[in-house]
Amino acid sequence: MTAFKTIRIGTRGSALARAQAKWVGARLQERYPGLTVELSIIKTKGDIMQDVSLAAIGGKGLFVKEIEDALLKGEIDLAVHSLKDLPAALPEGLKIGAIPKREDPRDVIISRDRLKLEALPRGARIGTGSLRRSVQLLELLPDLEIVPLRGNLDTRIKKIETENLTGIIVAAAGLRRLGWVEKAAQFLPVETMLPAVGQGALGIEICEGRNMEEQVAFLQDPATGLEIAAERAFLEEIGGGCRLPIAGFGMMRNETILLRGLVGSPDGRIIIRDKVTGPAGQAGELGRRLAQGLISKGGRELLAGGG
Image 1 (cartoon, rainbow, N blue to C red):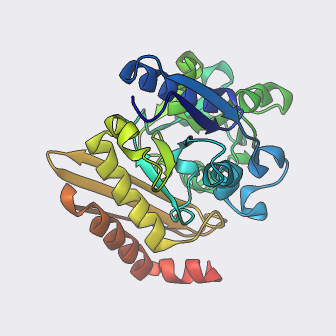
Image 2 (image 1 turned 180 degrees about the vertical axis):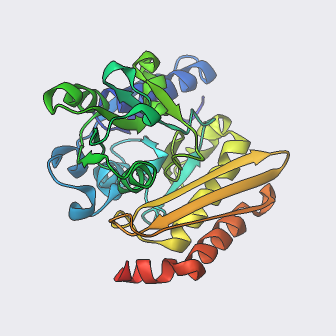
């Protein structure tokens, strides 16, 4: 590497965020021998206010704002995010420089006695802070008690005991990246639990015009990039933020993308699903078409607050 002898990577302070940033740092050092990588741990408002729901304090962007501010100020050279934490619209001057190959996009259940979803007893207490997960769970098992849950992955796992939960639902990718796969009682198929937009993928965020794009371009996975482009176009078109349950997942096969989407009312009484298929080269258009399909099927009323 000629332009940089040191690269400063900004990330959140959780074990998972640090592991993700270290993975990116290691790939950079493999590519550019002699490069020094420095991790900059940045606390975000979302990390600090863990006793309040995301919807109440402004949505998932609260996990990235302070990191993006540091990037814009030049205090860090790039940021590593879980892509599902990145809002559809980025601040002016910032862009996603690379999206590495996606990890497992599914959700998993971690439970007492390793109970699977279909074996949960009536009234089982399941922890999640995600509207998306809550409404899909209650659609399958209306007798569950959903317990609001936030915090880092290790904290949420501990709350199975401290909050007397039957289990929790979390992203499979986090368990895999931390080497905790054995904790999962069951991996939930995407047909059962549609993932969040970007789930399982990392987003490497950079500043435009600082010569960083060419340095991280080797990390881009073409197939993942197209899937994410479709999902994020869907998210941007449909809007809704964190106040509605929204899910979107694209899967590329043989230059074709199958894109599934979901929008619902916060109480789960209304859930609207749709899917589109088309050429991977039209990823953005597929995302917009899926959003428009959901809107025409009743999503307009939900997005306007009528759900």
